[in-house]
Image 1: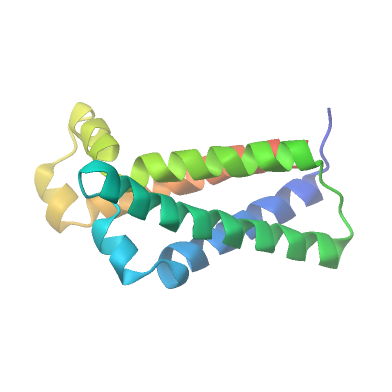
Image 2 (image 1 turned 90 degrees about the horizontal axis):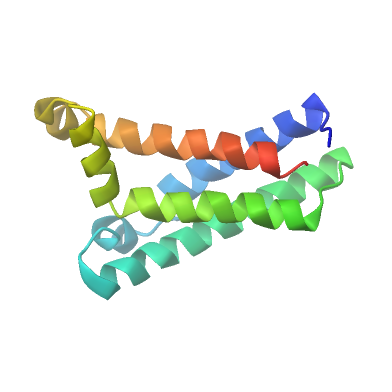
Length: 138
């Protein structure tokens, strides 16, 4: 299976732009404040955020298709969006990222006061967007 570089680049750009919009504009304040809460309410709140996040990504991909005329396989597109959604939910629950940061001996001061948790969260998301962008145009 071969993907041309232009399609991969357009898909990644669309996913990255959608990520920025969905994570910072579309996510509600309630979702931002409670998606990491313990229990099923936290999971449901996070799932609501991930649903609108994934919908935003799908809209961005449709825009790319409309403008470029590129064609994407629906199965690979669903697989890529699923990878993005599942990994987004994992990170936004916070505890998994905290455990990874602790295992890597990240400074507690940097994590809490230096913007470290936000940086780890965002880099996690972008890394998985890259993986999703590799899958989608396959």
